[in-house]
Length: 309
Image (cartoon, rainbow, N blue to C red):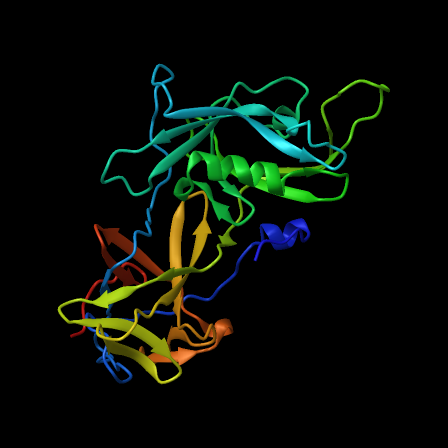
């Protein structure tokens, strides 16, 4: 699902209308219709290791050694098999977070070099990498992040890429986008790529690629299943069925919300004007706030947490 589309498609501002509420602590084999007087939540367990958070970034003192650090390389349209890649002009420092943290990894960009793309794109020493295109890096291992740079940041004079970073020492997230062009100003010299058509500013909201998550219904021996008939519970004796969880990430302030849909990719959970749980299409999906403690997810709207049984 990765693309090399224009910047507005890579990092698009999302203007979704969020519904008022949804919920049940049990996914039933029929449409769940809340009492209109109740504001409710979905409350489920998860068999997956997906993670969520209301905040990104932990304070890492400069004296703390990273678990891994590697010079970042990017692809050059003219590179040969003997040339591993161009220098981006930064080193990736990866810290593995302690058990219980909302995300497993923190990736900082350090050793920013003068004249290279990282500096020209206004990345500063110690800024925390959050996104490469649609890839949410706190969920990626060190090697995965390096591979995303190497395979998706291409020096060819036409491919635009975008990064989102958290400014070091500040609760501010910014996006920086550019096209990298081979530099042939001095023949027979290996010069850093030119940064053309740069864009820099506060990070916009973005919808991430869906995650397939297997939910078990709390207090039951059933998996959650969503289709056009509603939210259902399917016995665990059947093959595991997943739910698509599409997350929307907003910045300044940092906020995660999520929409839930079925395996068909067309049945989205929505709350109508009477606060009934209904199944709708993508254009009417509801984005819920959510928390995750251990393997337990709680979905809500507008901070309301009354549970409908």
